[in-house]
Structure formats: C-alpha cells, structure tokens
Length: 263
Ligand code: GLP
Image (cartoon, rainbow, N blue to C red; front, side):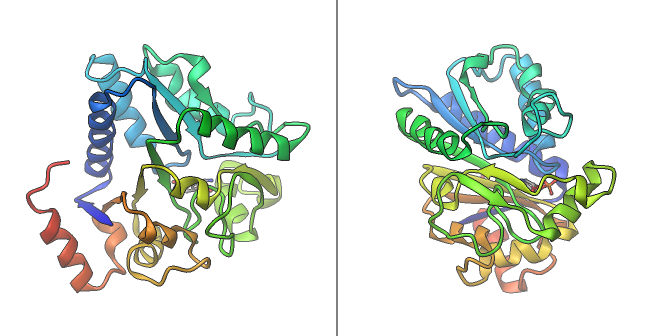
C-alpha cells in the first residue's frame, strides 16, 4: 500500500487530482475510463482541481464513466443534502465535457432498492469494472457507507447508518441527527476491492485514528477501510494532520519510500 503524505489539505488534493488526471490521460483502451467517486468534505479540493484542469484543457471527461459510492435513502435528487445534488453542485455541473449519461449514482428513492443495487453491480461489470475508485473515510473508518462490522466482501446494498455516523453527518442537517436519513445505498467493500486501483483521501486530526487503523492496524471488519491492505493497488493520500497516530517508524517509512516519487 502506498501512503502519500502531503504537508496540508491543499497539497493532498492537488496530488490526488494530478494522479487521477494522469490515469485518465494515459488510458488508451478501447473502452471508457471508469472512475469511482465519493462525496464528503475530503474530496472537495480534488473536485476543484479537476474542474480547473478540465477548464484549462488539461484533462477531458469525454471518455469517462463515473460511479458514485453511495446515496442516502429517502432524499430526492433535488434535496440539497442528497449525494446526487452534492456531486452536481461540486463537480459535474462545472465540467465542460462530461456526458450526463455517463454519470451513475445510486437512486435512494428506488421503489425496489435491492434491485437498484443489483443493477448497479451489473452496470459496473458491463463496463469491465472500475479502473480507479477514489474514496474518503469516516472517523470510524467507514468506506462508502460500510460501517464497522460490515463484511469485507460486501457488495452494493442497503446499509443502516450507525448513531455515530448520523451524529457526525448531522452538521449538514441542522445539527439534528434525527434528520439524517437512517439508511443509505452503498457500494460494498468487495465492490471497491474489485477496482483496479483505489485512492483514498484522509485528512485532518479527526481522521488520525482511522488512518493508523487503515494502514497499520489489523485487517478487521471493525475498521472496514483496513481491507485496503489486501488490495494490490491501494493508495492513501493524506495530510500531515492525519498522521498523528501513526508510529514514527511507519511515518518515516512512508516518507522515505515516497521521497523521489512524483505521482
Ligand atoms: C460520509 C460518506 C463517506 C465519506 C464520509 C467522510 O459518511 N458516506 O463516503 O467518506 O462521509 O466524510 P468527510 O470527507 O466529510 O469527512
């Protein structure tokens, strides 16, 4: 697993955006580049930088198909806290050449959520799988909405959110955890693990414990993000603040091994 430590959030975001751009630009296969995407505050800097590069003609999304990680159940698209709204507001609406037909986001209002999730898996497979899945994690280490003790081989499905996650996310719902939907649709850990590459953003002091568990704890369903240790193409892009709970040895190892790497 690579752990790329950058000085601060801005540098982490630029590094990750450049990495994604490099992969899209290098994609020569006769099929679209399939990109998995997260919501949350962690990826906002990456989205801003990708939009800038797209407007500057440095990267095109013409041949990119996207699949988002998750969506709340019961929020219509137009709700300003739906992940559909977030993705359009922070990213898709600003791109000059993104084909709306290539955007895939789970429908949290689906009449048959199980069918919705099964079809999502089928659609990912129809493109030949995900080339690069970008993600963020929760303070409890959840990847997408795979809360602690979700199976590490889980597939796209319905997830019940923990009280902790509803409290953390209540900052977007008038600080009332009861207003945060209790359920979500989410890709599984197995779905993410099937991607060719996974790039997870971890920043800020409040993620320090989760970062240490992700990269240097035991592989355990208690920290679902730790499954990434078993992925052969996993990269953690992080800032200094998130490294606070890494052992000095691990911290120095990652700095040393990444010293002369650019991307
Ligand atoms: C939500 C999302 C996750 C995201 C997490 C962290 O729970 N479902 O996909 O990674 O929040 O969000 P933030 O980046 O705002 O800390």
